[in-house]
Amino acid sequence: MRLSQYFLPLIKETPSEAQIASHRLMLRAGMIRQQAAGIYTWLPLGLRVLQKVEHIVADELNKAGCVRVLMPTLQPTELWKESGRYDALGKEMLRFKDRADRELLYSPTNEEMIVDVFRGYVKSYKSLPISLYQIQWKFRDEVRPRFGVMRGREFLMKDDYSFHANVDDAVREYWKMYDVYHAIFKRMGLQTVAVRAETGAIGGDLSHEFHVLAETGESAVYYDKKFDDLREGKITMTGDEQRKLYAAADEMHKPDACPIAKEDLREARGIEVGQVFFLGNKYSKAMGVTIAGPDGQNITPEMGCYGIGVSRLLGAIIEAGHDDNGIIWPAAVAPFDAGLINLRSGDAKCDALCDSIYAALAQKGMDVLYDDTDERAGGKFAGMDLIGLPWQIVVGPKGAEKNMVELKNRKTGEKQELSVEAMLATFTKA
Ligand code: 5CA
Image: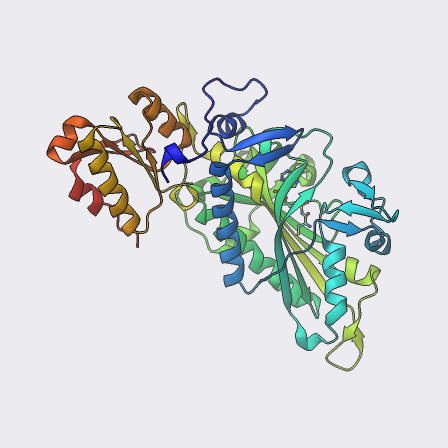
């Protein structure tokens, strides 16, 4: 992508409304624009990252046997009267009427609707297990939308709902998804701590929240210090061993009843990027779902549901990876793989070299943002640092004479003078 043809509205000043780094940087890097409290336009750069995050989530879920669907954002309120949750969400749920005076709501979550889909087709335990997920916009009229995409009113969620013939199968799926979640977040360069959590308005018997530890996190979490040792690579543990360690969300942590010694307990702030629930038959029973069971008797399916805050993840990734100059994207979610800076656009040699590098990198399958504008060098460097692409390739008139470029690693700040061939050879991406 040539910057001269792109839409990248960078902001130099620090936006006064933003209290945390990720919010400030998303505004400054031209990723999002606020349209109303907690409601955002995704600008091109932000949309690229959002789609990469979405792709990783979908890819890992597909590998785990989950099947993608897409439900509407709007729902008839009747379904919520059936489940008994019509009043449970209160003002958080946005309701309105269509021209025929029928009440609709903007989905804050989709348990009722997926149960409605399920009961429309599935008649026998032989069709189970089934796990259906979507990545779709949600609306919750939060009392205090804040921190940009971290606590929005409209936000993108991955919500997955599984159906099983018995409790054992449902609980097995729950722990499978627990592992899948760690893998999903790891692929985005994030380390997460899973803590036991209340089930709240979603309900059910067992739940974990997945937190990215960050000082700006909205939640307090408590956990065995062995998690820190694990993260720092000081010890290794099997998944089974990890699950037995103490880890609790604020509302689950009872200091008097805490099973581990004070010196082994860590308290930290966390950003909740996902939550998993074993629902039991709360929704299937309330909505009267029965299917044929293995011994000829009708059974009520057991359910699980598994959410990920897809748009919130961008905030969490930035909180975990930035410096004074801007964002530092993990390669897997970076909006472009590299930035190419032409220090003298209009100079025949610089232009020709940049064009050839741009073509060679594209040949390797790399997505490059080429700054071909005539802004001054300082502004180009600052802009590239701000948007945080993993690599910067700098072409200036002196280097162009000798076929040399500078390659900068955004994360380490390390710079290397390299021949064009040597620079190209460092990128092996297919
Ligand atoms: N139905 C279940 C998941 S299938 C559910 O709604 N779970 S949830 O309430 O925990 O939401 C799932 C995830 O969405 C949360 O873990 C969080 O990462 C994200 N999320 C929730 N509220 C917001 C919000 N206001 N802004 C941004 N992300 C949010």
